[in-house]
Length: 88
Image (cartoon, rainbow, N blue to C red; front, side, top):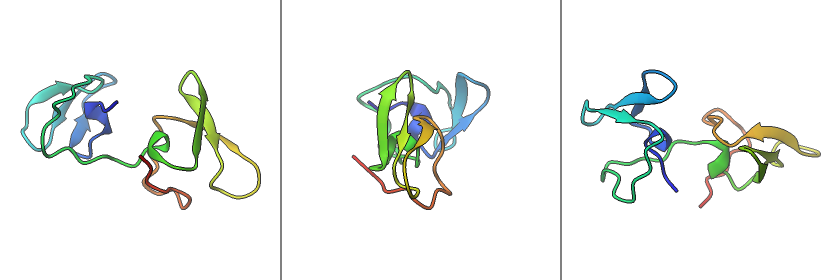
């Protein structure tokens, strides 16, 4: 499932709404649409990483940063994470 907030072109205005940097149109970040724009570019988030193991309520475990696992939010931006591995 992809949301507009999962796109690199999404610029957040508040917790719910934002602007598409590609079209300059206002959009809802959590709007799920099978026909997202053709310019969709997935941003690195924990939920998109092979090292992230989801558990419940948007939380999971990161197993990509050394011994043992660390708690991680699914929606956390992982752009600077040294263990990030783009997943499915």
